[in-house]
Structure formats: structure tokens, C-alpha cells
Length: 210
Image (tube, rainbow, N blue to C red; front, top):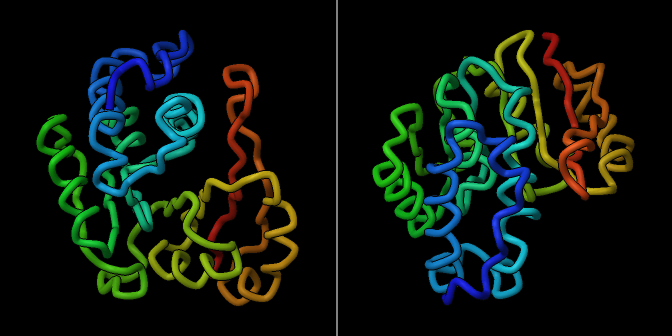
């Protein structure tokens, strides 16, 4: 992948990542160089890699604390990006596909991320109980499917913070039953990064009350 095909780093990237921007640059370049060949991103993504993927993920970093899992991490969006932006948070990247797990582990080592555990598993295989402060996911599945996969991992008072698209509100409406079943009474859409990004990030956020 030639560098000319990759989106030029937006000026706002340094503002979002602060003193972690060099690590973010290394990850983004690695994804641009290897992502398509390794089946991590599609051929249309390099020209919008920063704006559509990396910054879209990074802008939600202030919402997290404690110990957080990213379900279906794939290329590391949002998990690796968030781990770069928030080295003070403990991240568990849960991904079932071996080749993606290999990529995640390579990046953790290459970038020197000592706040990341990569776990080859599906969310439903989680055996550690409801111990997490939050769970996140991006472009995995509809909210009604995600809630039963993610809520059991989160402790009472913890949060689901799920990156979603323009139909986030409709997804909440379609997930009334699982939201009620898993004790999430305050599910809502929050828009993050309006002052920073041309296309801000929408998250569905809700607190677990058992």
C-alpha cells in the first residue's frame, strides 16, 4: 500500500491523542500498510482511515475508566485505538478469529502497550463473571444482539458504551426487551466529538442495574 493512497493525518489528530499521537501514527500506518492484505480493512478504507476509523474511535476515549473489554476487536477499532489514547485504562480485546488475534498481539508488542490483554474468544465464552467497568464494541452487530453478549461481562453500576451509526436511536427502540432483561434502564444515544470531527461519533450508552 503506497502512502499516497492513505489519508493525510488531520490536524485534529494531535489534539485528540495529545502526547500519544506518535503511537497512534505508528498504528495507523501499520494498518494502512498491512490492513487490506491481511483482510482487516476493505480497499476503500485507506483514504479515510484517520477520519472514519481512528479518530472516530479515539474521540470516545474520555468516556472510559477502570477495566474495559472491546468485543470483536478485529483490526483494533476501537480497542487498540482506545488503548493508545488511554494508557491509564486496562483493556481486554476479545476477538475469535486467529488471524485478527495475531494482528492484535503484534500491534500490542510493536507499540509497547502494557495495558492490553488480547483474548481469543467470543463474548459468550467469557468465564470471568461480571467484573468489568465497561464494555465497548464497534460495527459488530445490532444492539438487540449485542446487549445479551456484553451486559453479562459488566459489573453492577458499570456501563455499555457501544459505538453506533446514524440509526442508533432506532436500535435502542428495537432492543427494548433485552435492555429490560439485562437491567439497562437509561439507554440513550450520545454524540461525541461534534467540535472536533466533521462526522462525530454516536455511542449507545447505558448503565447496568441488577
